[in-house]
Length: 267
Length: 64
View: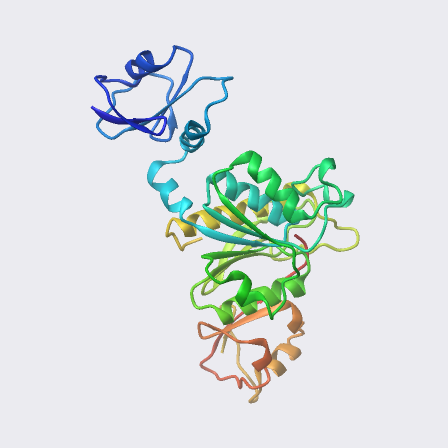
């Protein structure tokens, strides 16, 4: 039977997943069959994708990619890997969105921010003490290299304005609006929808404070515009931005990006 | 005219800009779609609203 094992196509004389493990690994190895980690033995069929992972062992680079991708449903992974997504603003939303998109294996990411990491970012943004003073683009790119080195990451240390939108985002499928200021959010949404006919934009509005998680939702108020948040709670004096709701909102945005990459346009 | 799903009646002919001002929208923090097309911000004063129009107005609040 022809199956793929740890990224390599093989002809094996096995009927079940445990038989495959017995042949090429040992009993304590994890088995992932077509994206799902199995605990009990399972019959296998022609063209199945199996990944056998020995815990605590650092695989060779070529094996690593197939092991990392093992949890992605095979056909889903292929589409996601072809995706090109830009993240505009690398604060609480953008840094967390970028990390999630890297984990799901989006093939090409563009990270844009003009700022450096400073102490007040650490309450909600995906940075550490060791990143203080570093540009956000560099700090995030370094983290992504540690999480998923198999994706292409481009960075731009630049302030996004009406004049550079078309040059920056040309060639991308989706733009994530992850700015802080409402004027910047409005500018990016307006200009992307006006200057491109095909790019979709996933924006955010309203995620400050500690109001109910369940108020944060994804909507599609306009053609090609997806909006995540509670649409009400802006950051203001007495209502700061906190990690949980910011990350919930980032999760909404990242999941909408995933859905769009898979061809699903409903929220 | 339909605005964000609600039918409203216009009492006089007016531009999109005047309508947004009257409704107290801050035009630097919104996006407007008219009949399925984004309205470029520079043209708000040139767009004269019609009873048949469908508007979607998205307002952005700060935080990210």
